[in-house]
Image 1 (spheres, each protein chain N blue to C red):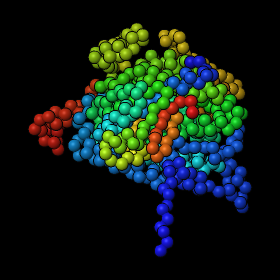
Image 2 (image 1 turned 30 degrees about the vertical axis):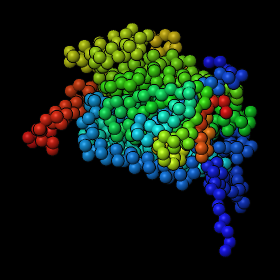
Image 3 (image 1 turned 180 degrees about the vertical axis):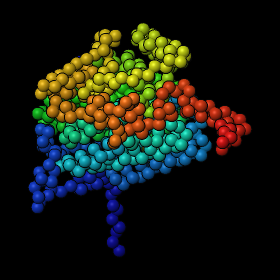
Image 4 (image 1 turned 60 degrees about the vertical axis):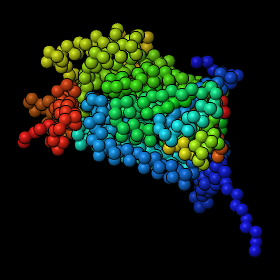
Length: 100
Length: 527
């Protein structure tokens, strides 16, 4: 591994997030895949892992559009399995990225 | 009438600030240094604690709400599992041995982490760090409890789960995880965070809780996958805390960089060695496998850890010393560990076995560069011996590495046919190590590691027998005396899986689960 002085290689490293594979996660996963065009989902027994180069964002509004219900982004805690990258969270967006 | 004032609801970030930073004050009738004696002596320089951020911004009210929901979900699953005799739905009774290792070697670490975070949560002068550490302390206690509750169901049916608290204090291989945490807890608070929050939680716990727990789901163990994922969802907060505390230290003062690098080097290597147990659980102890240790290492250590160290390069941090050796080890450590436990299955409270032909085929496919050449011949030899009534149990005691406390079974970098030995001399005494990584850790703080409680040394010094034991009497059997001190039921908890009580009971219960047998007396015992 080379030290990276420009930041580009580091900021394009993959981030990921994984959720329990259940009904509550379905809308979140759907929203993430719709909002992050480069994101890919991989299914393993019991869990879904979503990888994305650079930055991945979860938007409250997109989840609410799918479910038709109000959604508090901190609810993702309940079905979250793991993640990677720097977290930035407010009431509307939860994002993961490198190079922050 | 006055116009009603609409109160603006605080946003997440403001609410977090109000609920954490407002909790701190400077002491007046005692100096701060006296009230907080620990957070300076390691040499870490902090100029502005307010720059500390807990990225999840979970306040206590939200914490209780979401943790409460997680608990409800988890206990609903555990309850259903118990009512429906879920233990009969697992793939194979061999699988239970992975749970035995878990309750013996992982669950006590949760308790140690709870204690460690309670300690540092009291001792940081910064309020943000204190709140984060206290929440983590509660999480870790929760993990200890939920794992104990979930696995206690198995204790009603299987051997080797009844005495884990005492085993953690006494049994030879459990000194490996125990010494890891005691090393961390007896360090300063910033080193503790680097050891546990960063090196262990961020770089390494995904390897334990994600593929292994997915494996539990694959093997029909719903209660374990649920406690695993419930714990791991807390871990994702802990991991962000780990990154945050590293970045915080690096951003506060350039003088912190070399100290942090030294800790990263040390704790990456110690954590890597500790995870040898998990490598073996994944490759050998899950009858239905999800991914090999090697694949998990590539996904979570090389890819994810690689991204992390590329990111930290901007602070002048490089990948940990020993990274290359650890990556080379992905082809070997699970096989070398299983071989060791197969050898010492008389002295361990769980069962071992030789993988069947299908499993060996899987291992060959997953390890094309090492399995058939180096490890298959040995396993096939063991199987032949076992089939001829000569199951081999090693009854001699191995030399342990003074740092990681694992028997010296690992091989040389670049030559997997030669055992790696290193040694250092300190105050005229020789100390032995399994690797350059472990020797390096010792050489950094020899005065600490010369105090290691090494099980083999302790046995030879006569400290591992019950009171009143006379090792000089004729016919004295030292192994039997040590097992007696451990509290192992010889013949039930130990030896080969083949022919074990667990194997026989499970077969009988499974038979009764699919036929009209008496469920109260599935084995049809007449006594």
